[in-house]
Length: 141
Image 1 (cartoon, one colour):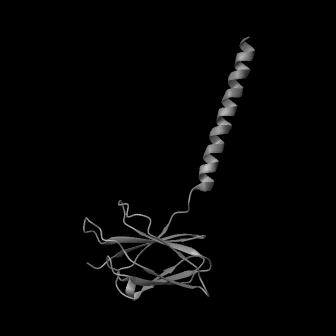
Image 2 (cartoon, rainbow, N blue to C red):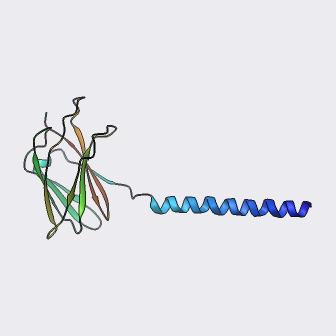
Image 3 (cartoon, rainbow, N blue to C red):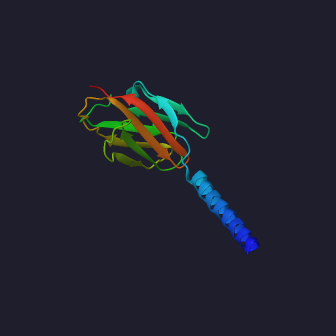
């Protein structure tokens, strides 16, 4: 009787360990790579970001500001990507734009919404299959 309880307890411990190990391994595989962060004081002058697999350049035709459209040009892309805009700690809605690179270049026209709190500190996320680039910039008032 004691031997069967011991075997049952041992089997339960081994099974529990295997389940926990499987959950941990799954989380390690699905965890996104950390974003490469860059600051871009003036997007209209352009920002060059050197990565292990490419050099990506971001440039706008004018200083981004709320409610005024601007054109964003991205060079150095080797595959389709998505551009998203947002603010740290503040949900700004799903502002996302797909990019299709032709000869490593892509462009889009975007408009930032007005932040009711008066903040101008924006983040641009460039999501590529190779990983995310996060660019901090300040919009014009």
